[in-house]
Length: 180
Image (cartoon, rainbow, N blue to C red; front, top):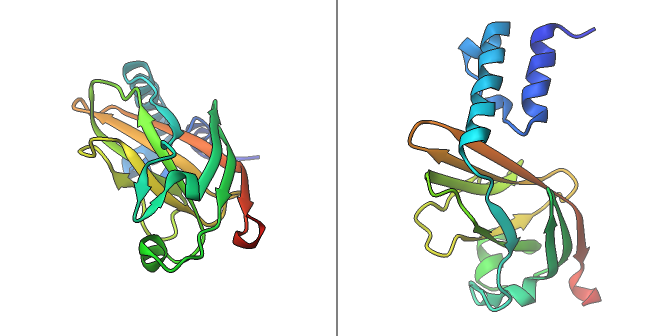
């Protein structure tokens, strides 16, 4: 049987929030209840954003979106489609190594959002990227463990509300370079 505090922490995480966001003051039962309440308030305040495939002609360090992925679809919190392995020694792979990359575009961002972060969790090296000032809200992310990583998008507003959205990558098909 789990302690109540651990059950509340599991509930907090199950609703899409990060355990790392919990502070020492939220480690008590009352603190956990307050953290869940604050998270629910944020969900009531900020509107979810939309994630979609980056346009096929988007250029990522000399490659187009069409050269890296195809048929990317987001349905609810599940992403499907194909990622095409990049083994060329070019801009992308010289920075991040060969592998599979997904280009995504964020739209319908809440008008009250003052900060927007996006990335894969767990991250291999880059962590979440701040794309608040990025005019096109397009990000390129390296997928290393599609069954363990999730795409995470977080919006913050000036009042301190935070809305976290998570999208499963397990439905992606990884197409090796020699199979293309």
